[in-house]
Image (cartoon, rainbow, N blue to C red):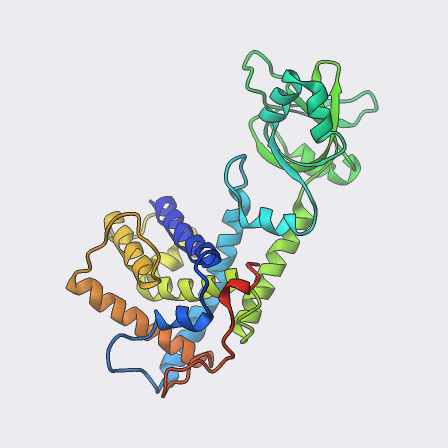
Length: 328
């Protein structure tokens, strides 16, 4: 249940980030959608509310880290993670599963050499077994679509001494992703060399995204579209479902609310952010009250962050083309 809820949150978050690529609007247009739709615009915020906002920001940082961690776990042959976009800005690489690498080389070694030999490859696969080469270094045997074989794509390491502790923790059935160089075919098997775990890139990715979130929280709204949207959406979700959000952060199991209720509340959030919902949404009186509360709470947050003038509802920051904000 948590998984479906979290996936729904991510779908909303990524829609909010990437739909702006085709809907050219300045930030002010997006902020307008969050303006309270009644005559009451909050212009005073007491100390208790300020303390609550500060507490929510700390929860948002934890949730943001949860998003980053889950994004790193979702690297797969299909789809594209935020981490892959980050990595693509650092190095040029081709993403392939060990199954596809094996199949392509089996079908046409010469054509595969022209595409992959000496190229950096993000290799995804399941460990079948770990062998030792003639020079006593470890060789990973990764899965193939031919179930008669337990000896598909072979991968060797750039610095096996440095990575020996991580390699030693691997076992048959582990799903891994590595950065390697394509090394053609040796004997009957496609091979890759100079493989490395991506820990350093992942640590840099985590650090960079947290720095971007801090920058946005401190007023640099153009630091990152992903951070800005994550901040505002996460704040809304925390207001709407505080127990669920905190249980997610803590890794607890089932929340007390029914799954259908959570799904519906996600749809209301999508409506609030003007994102197309997967099913038609007819707002009940309760939904409208919920949306009104959310808008007021988000508006308070925008006031505290000195983004909105509490009296006039105008931007206090210089308006900018949201489409041109760096995604990361």
